[in-house]
Image (cartoon, rainbow, N blue to C red):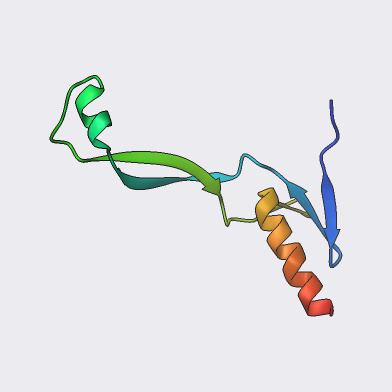
Length: 85
């Protein structure tokens, strides 16, 4: 079993967890081709909703370790580097 990737930032332990995501729903216009040639046939429905997963901004603290999405940990690391300069 692989070991979890833990980073130390300003004396705090951060563990990356890529399952910390949130759904993001967007309204997208359907092309004419999609409206006419897809099943079920609904040519008057001009939009559709697409749901994607985006990194959650939530940081969880448990047993002395912070858990966050790897993209959020990278943002925190960039902010701490700017503060130390």
